[in-house]
Picture 1: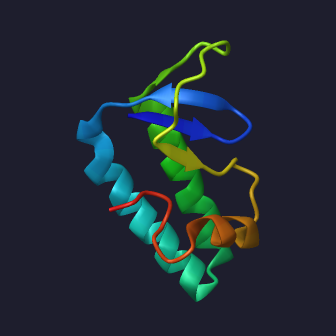
Picture 2: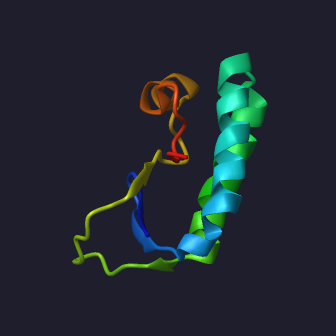
Length: 92
């Protein structure tokens, strides 16, 4: 699967990591719903670090269709809330 982190680029990630990322996405959604800014920041950072650590960055000149688009690390809670809708960042 190809994941885009806004402002950073694309990462190729094995589908086998989907469950782990989905768990973090569920945590992020719960923190968003409760307005837990500190938890939101922590979980967003953990999610992005997991994608970076588990995946392989694509070259900057590669333009593959992204199956997932994740917010930048400095995105606000409101910006991510708009991206999430009711489904979370990772469709499940």
